[in-house]
Length: 260
Image (cartoon, rainbow, N blue to C red; front, side, top):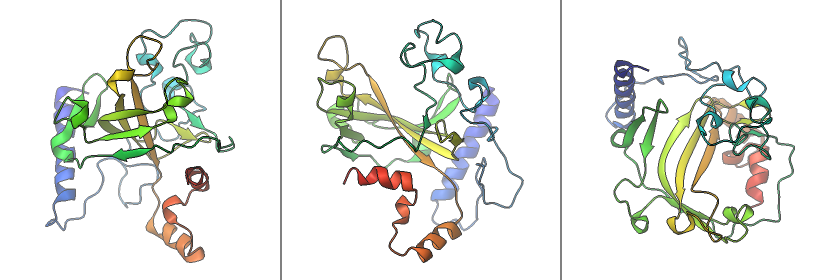
Protein backbone atom coordinates (compact mmCIF):
# COMPACT_ATOMS: atom_id res chain seq x y z
CA UNK A 1 0.00 0.00 0.00
CA UNK A 2 1.44 3.34 -1.04
CA UNK A 3 1.21 6.40 1.22
CA UNK A 4 -1.46 7.93 -1.03
CA UNK A 5 -3.47 4.69 -0.93
CA UNK A 6 -3.13 4.68 2.86
CA UNK A 7 -4.43 8.26 3.13
CA UNK A 8 -7.31 7.51 0.76
CA UNK A 9 -8.37 4.39 2.70
CA UNK A 10 -7.92 6.09 6.07
CA UNK A 11 -10.13 9.01 5.00
CA UNK A 12 -12.76 6.63 3.65
CA UNK A 13 -12.81 4.70 6.95
CA UNK A 14 -13.07 7.92 8.99
CA UNK A 15 -15.92 9.17 6.80
CA UNK A 16 -17.78 5.89 7.29
CA UNK A 17 -17.27 6.06 11.05
CA UNK A 18 -18.53 9.66 11.10
CA UNK A 19 -21.60 8.68 9.09
CA UNK A 20 -22.32 5.69 11.32
CA UNK A 21 -22.14 7.61 14.62
CA UNK A 22 -23.92 10.76 13.44
CA UNK A 23 -27.44 10.57 14.94
CA UNK A 24 -28.75 13.15 12.46
CA UNK A 25 -27.61 11.22 9.42
CA UNK A 26 -30.43 9.39 7.69
CA UNK A 27 -28.40 8.38 4.65
CA UNK A 28 -28.05 4.59 4.43
CA UNK A 29 -24.41 3.66 4.05
CA UNK A 30 -22.80 0.53 2.68
CA UNK A 31 -19.60 -1.10 3.99
CA UNK A 32 -16.26 -0.12 2.49
CA UNK A 33 -15.47 -3.78 1.85
CA UNK A 34 -17.69 -6.82 1.50
CA UNK A 35 -17.62 -10.10 3.38
CA UNK A 36 -18.63 -13.38 1.68
CA UNK A 37 -22.24 -13.17 2.88
CA UNK A 38 -22.75 -9.48 2.15
CA UNK A 39 -26.50 -8.75 2.04
CA UNK A 40 -26.28 -5.50 0.08
CA UNK A 41 -27.53 -5.49 -3.47
CA UNK A 42 -24.52 -3.93 -5.16
CA UNK A 43 -21.26 -4.76 -6.91
CA UNK A 44 -19.29 -6.44 -4.13
CA UNK A 45 -15.88 -5.09 -3.17
CA UNK A 46 -13.81 -7.95 -1.75
CA UNK A 47 -10.37 -7.47 -0.21
CA UNK A 48 -9.42 -11.15 -0.22
CA UNK A 49 -10.12 -14.42 -1.93
CA UNK A 50 -12.78 -15.82 0.39
CA UNK A 51 -12.68 -19.27 -1.13
CA UNK A 52 -9.39 -20.03 0.60
CA UNK A 53 -9.30 -21.95 3.90
CA UNK A 54 -6.95 -23.96 6.10
CA UNK A 55 -6.68 -26.68 3.46
CA UNK A 56 -4.90 -24.25 1.14
CA UNK A 57 -1.14 -23.57 1.36
CA UNK A 58 -0.31 -20.84 3.87
CA UNK A 59 1.00 -18.48 1.20
CA UNK A 60 -2.39 -18.54 -0.54
CA UNK A 61 -4.53 -17.87 2.54
CA UNK A 62 -5.91 -14.38 3.25
CA UNK A 63 -3.92 -12.25 5.67
CA UNK A 64 -0.35 -12.58 6.93
CA UNK A 65 0.86 -15.79 8.53
CA UNK A 66 2.11 -15.26 12.08
CA UNK A 67 5.09 -17.57 11.66
CA UNK A 68 6.62 -15.53 8.86
CA UNK A 69 7.06 -12.71 11.36
CA UNK A 70 8.91 -14.87 13.92
CA UNK A 71 12.58 -14.21 13.15
CA UNK A 72 13.70 -16.51 15.97
CA UNK A 73 11.59 -19.51 14.98
CA UNK A 74 13.83 -22.62 14.93
CA UNK A 75 14.75 -24.01 11.54
CA UNK A 76 14.31 -27.77 11.36
CA UNK A 77 12.53 -30.39 9.30
CA UNK A 78 9.21 -29.26 10.74
CA UNK A 79 9.62 -25.55 10.04
CA UNK A 80 11.34 -25.71 6.65
CA UNK A 81 7.94 -26.39 5.12
CA UNK A 82 5.50 -24.07 6.88
CA UNK A 83 2.52 -26.10 5.72
CA UNK A 84 3.77 -29.11 7.70
CA UNK A 85 5.09 -27.22 10.73
CA UNK A 86 4.60 -28.94 14.07
CA UNK A 87 3.89 -27.06 17.33
CA UNK A 88 5.90 -29.69 19.21
CA UNK A 89 9.08 -28.99 17.26
CA UNK A 90 8.64 -25.44 16.00
CA UNK A 91 8.02 -22.55 18.36
CA UNK A 92 4.75 -20.91 17.36
CA UNK A 93 4.73 -22.89 14.14
CA UNK A 94 1.00 -23.56 14.33
CA UNK A 95 -0.04 -20.73 16.64
CA UNK A 96 -1.93 -19.10 13.83
CA UNK A 97 -3.95 -19.69 11.82
CA UNK A 98 -5.77 -22.27 13.94
CA UNK A 99 -8.53 -24.52 12.68
CA UNK A 100 -11.11 -25.13 15.42
CA UNK A 101 -12.48 -28.65 15.17
CA UNK A 102 -16.00 -28.78 16.63
CA UNK A 103 -15.64 -32.51 17.21
CA UNK A 104 -13.05 -31.92 19.92
CA UNK A 105 -14.51 -32.55 23.37
CA UNK A 106 -14.90 -29.40 25.46
CA UNK A 107 -13.09 -29.74 28.80
CA UNK A 108 -15.48 -29.45 31.72
CA UNK A 109 -12.91 -29.89 34.51
CA UNK A 110 -11.60 -26.31 34.28
CA UNK A 111 -13.54 -23.39 35.75
CA UNK A 112 -12.34 -19.83 35.25
CA UNK A 113 -14.04 -18.63 38.41
CA UNK A 114 -11.99 -15.41 38.64
CA UNK A 115 -12.81 -14.26 35.12
CA UNK A 116 -13.83 -10.62 34.92
CA UNK A 117 -13.35 -7.86 32.40
CA UNK A 118 -13.84 -4.19 31.68
CA UNK A 119 -13.29 -2.26 28.47
CA UNK A 120 -13.37 1.48 27.91
CA UNK A 121 -15.70 3.19 25.47
CA UNK A 122 -13.63 3.98 22.40
CA UNK A 123 -14.03 6.83 19.95
CA UNK A 124 -13.25 4.85 16.81
CA UNK A 125 -12.28 7.89 14.77
CA UNK A 126 -9.89 9.34 17.35
CA UNK A 127 -8.26 6.01 18.25
CA UNK A 128 -7.76 4.81 14.66
CA UNK A 129 -4.07 4.18 13.92
CA UNK A 130 -2.11 2.59 11.09
CA UNK A 131 0.59 -0.06 11.47
CA UNK A 132 2.78 0.41 8.41
CA UNK A 133 4.78 -2.77 9.04
CA UNK A 134 1.64 -4.87 9.27
CA UNK A 135 -0.20 -2.84 6.61
CA UNK A 136 -3.27 -2.72 8.84
CA UNK A 137 -5.48 -0.33 10.78
CA UNK A 138 -6.00 -0.76 14.50
CA UNK A 139 -7.65 1.03 17.42
CA UNK A 140 -5.73 1.94 20.57
CA UNK A 141 -6.75 0.94 24.09
CA UNK A 142 -5.51 2.32 27.42
CA UNK A 143 -3.86 5.21 25.58
CA UNK A 144 -4.52 7.70 28.38
CA UNK A 145 -1.88 6.31 30.75
CA UNK A 146 1.15 4.02 30.69
CA UNK A 147 0.52 2.87 34.28
CA UNK A 148 -1.21 -0.50 34.62
CA UNK A 149 -3.19 0.60 37.68
CA UNK A 150 -4.81 3.33 35.55
CA UNK A 151 -5.78 1.05 32.67
CA UNK A 152 -9.52 0.76 32.09
CA UNK A 153 -9.43 -2.05 29.54
CA UNK A 154 -8.41 -5.43 30.95
CA UNK A 155 -9.52 -8.93 31.75
CA UNK A 156 -8.49 -11.30 34.53
CA UNK A 157 -8.31 -15.05 33.99
CA UNK A 158 -7.02 -18.37 35.31
CA UNK A 159 -6.52 -19.66 31.76
CA UNK A 160 -2.80 -18.89 32.09
CA UNK A 161 -2.57 -21.70 34.68
CA UNK A 162 -3.25 -24.24 31.94
CA UNK A 163 0.12 -23.34 30.40
CA UNK A 164 2.10 -21.88 33.31
CA UNK A 165 1.25 -24.29 36.13
CA UNK A 166 2.99 -22.10 38.73
CA UNK A 167 0.77 -19.07 38.02
CA UNK A 168 -2.78 -19.12 39.41
CA UNK A 169 -4.20 -16.15 37.52
CA UNK A 170 -3.21 -13.06 35.57
CA UNK A 171 -4.50 -9.72 34.41
CA UNK A 172 -4.11 -8.83 30.76
CA UNK A 173 -4.29 -5.18 29.76
CA UNK A 174 -5.73 -4.07 26.43
CA UNK A 175 -3.29 -2.53 23.94
CA UNK A 176 -5.32 -2.36 20.74
CA UNK A 177 -7.99 -4.12 18.73
CA UNK A 178 -8.21 -4.80 15.02
CA UNK A 179 -10.19 -6.83 12.49
CA UNK A 180 -9.51 -9.54 9.92
CA UNK A 181 -11.89 -10.08 7.03
CA UNK A 182 -12.26 -12.92 6.37
CA UNK A 183 -11.31 -14.47 9.71
CA UNK A 184 -7.70 -15.37 10.45
CA UNK A 185 -8.75 -18.64 12.04
CA UNK A 186 -11.34 -21.12 10.84
CA UNK A 187 -13.99 -23.50 12.15
CA UNK A 188 -14.01 -26.99 10.64
CA UNK A 189 -11.79 -25.69 7.84
CA UNK A 190 -14.08 -22.80 6.90
CA UNK A 191 -13.17 -19.14 7.25
CA UNK A 192 -15.82 -16.85 8.73
CA UNK A 193 -16.72 -13.38 7.54
CA UNK A 194 -14.99 -11.35 10.24
CA UNK A 195 -12.72 -11.80 13.25
CA UNK A 196 -11.93 -9.20 15.90
CA UNK A 197 -8.71 -9.44 17.91
CA UNK A 198 -8.15 -7.60 21.19
CA UNK A 199 -4.40 -7.59 21.83
CA UNK A 200 -3.31 -7.50 25.48
CA UNK A 201 -0.09 -7.34 27.48
CA UNK A 202 0.32 -9.71 30.42
CA UNK A 203 0.64 -7.94 33.79
CA UNK A 204 4.22 -6.70 34.01
CA UNK A 205 5.28 -8.49 37.21
CA UNK A 206 4.75 -11.85 35.46
CA UNK A 207 6.87 -10.99 32.40
CA UNK A 208 10.62 -11.51 32.17
CA UNK A 209 13.30 -14.05 33.03
CA UNK A 210 12.94 -16.37 36.02
CA UNK A 211 11.15 -19.51 37.19
CA UNK A 212 8.29 -17.48 38.66
CA UNK A 213 7.61 -15.68 35.37
CA UNK A 214 5.25 -16.55 32.52
CA UNK A 215 6.36 -17.86 29.15
CA UNK A 216 4.00 -15.29 27.63
CA UNK A 217 4.20 -11.52 27.33
CA UNK A 218 0.97 -10.99 25.39
CA UNK A 219 -2.44 -12.55 24.91
CA UNK A 220 -5.08 -12.08 22.23
CA UNK A 221 -8.81 -12.53 22.66
CA UNK A 222 -10.58 -13.34 19.41
CA UNK A 223 -14.23 -13.02 18.37
CA UNK A 224 -15.50 -14.56 15.16
CA UNK A 225 -18.51 -13.33 13.21
CA UNK A 226 -20.68 -14.67 10.41
CA UNK A 227 -22.99 -12.30 8.55
CA UNK A 228 -26.58 -13.48 8.38
CA UNK A 229 -29.78 -11.68 7.33
CA UNK A 230 -32.25 -10.68 10.06
CA UNK A 231 -34.70 -13.23 8.69
CA UNK A 232 -32.34 -16.01 9.83
CA UNK A 233 -32.65 -15.00 13.48
CA UNK A 234 -36.35 -14.23 13.19
CA UNK A 235 -36.96 -17.74 11.90
CA UNK A 236 -34.97 -19.32 14.74
CA UNK A 237 -36.89 -17.31 17.32
CA UNK A 238 -40.18 -18.23 15.68
CA UNK A 239 -39.43 -21.96 15.68
CA UNK A 240 -37.76 -21.99 19.11
CA UNK A 241 -39.11 -19.15 21.28
CA UNK A 242 -37.02 -20.21 24.28
CA UNK A 243 -33.72 -20.27 22.40
CA UNK A 244 -31.27 -17.49 23.25
CA UNK A 245 -30.32 -16.36 19.76
CA UNK A 246 -27.22 -14.67 21.17
CA UNK A 247 -25.84 -18.22 21.35
CA UNK A 248 -27.53 -19.69 18.30
CA UNK A 249 -24.40 -21.65 17.38
CA UNK A 250 -24.51 -25.05 19.15
CA UNK A 251 -20.74 -25.25 19.56
CA UNK A 252 -20.59 -21.81 21.20
CA UNK A 253 -23.64 -22.65 23.32
CA UNK A 254 -21.95 -25.83 24.61
CA UNK A 255 -18.79 -23.88 25.31
CA UNK A 256 -20.69 -21.15 27.19
CA UNK A 257 -22.55 -23.79 29.22
CA UNK A 258 -19.27 -25.06 30.70
CA UNK A 259 -18.71 -21.66 32.34
CA UNK A 260 -22.07 -21.60 34.13
